[in-house]
Amino acid sequence: MSAELAGQVALVTGASRGIGRAIALRLAAAGADVVVNYLRDAAAAEETVRRVREAGGSARPLAFDVGDAAAVRAGVADVVDREGRLDILVNNAGLAVDALVLRLTEEDWHRVLRTNLTGVFHCAKAAARTMIRQRYGRIVNLTSVVAEMGNAGQAAYAAAKAGVIGFTRSLAREVAPRAVTVNAVAPGLVETEMSGALTPERKAAYTSLIPAGRVASADEVAAAVGFLASPAAGYVTGHVLHVNGGLYM
Image (cartoon, rainbow, N blue to C red; front, side):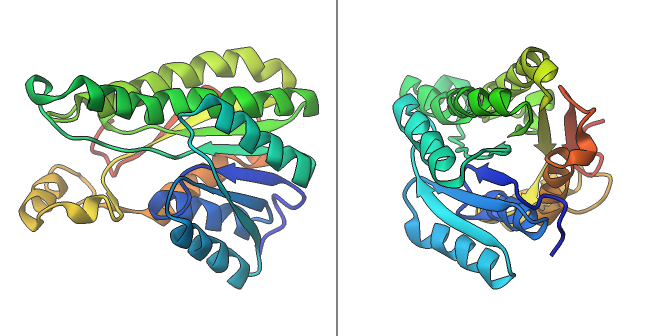
């Protein structure tokens, strides 16, 4: 266990599995008290909490829908009321609905943007109020390599993740005078449950495009988030850190 984030409180959205779980574990290992947000899978969230505690860290689960502004306000208020502060917000919650534009329904378009972009807005707005009062905070938003490159069949996902980049840079300018940084991490293909749904052929085709010759682990993405959430990154803001093995440069 490290003490780099000792005494700090971190809220990680969508932390019940995959990249979110890896981020929760990374921040807890650095000494932060972690609040594990989830939407429906309470058992998976409890598993994240169990792993954090088993490793000697501190965590608790908290359910709310990032796309629901009132639920987010209540969730962040719960964190501040119980923990007394909020130092780190990681906006990781997300979903993908893959379809070519001509087959993409308006319902699915709005569903993807509601979670992946509007959810980031809701959480960052609620957290920033506390961070500004504290005169300290770290907000890290998860975007994606497809925000920069585009990807056939992922127009909604790419649009939302591109929006996250613009939001990140704009908010960074607004809160920088109060010692609050806002950055983004843009992973490429990562070994998670989501990528595990790819057929071996599609996964091999994607991997062949990556100069590093392999997909990332969730821990490698979490390491990037951990740096941007740390005191060492106090002079880094409005930045998009790519973790993609050279897929996009």
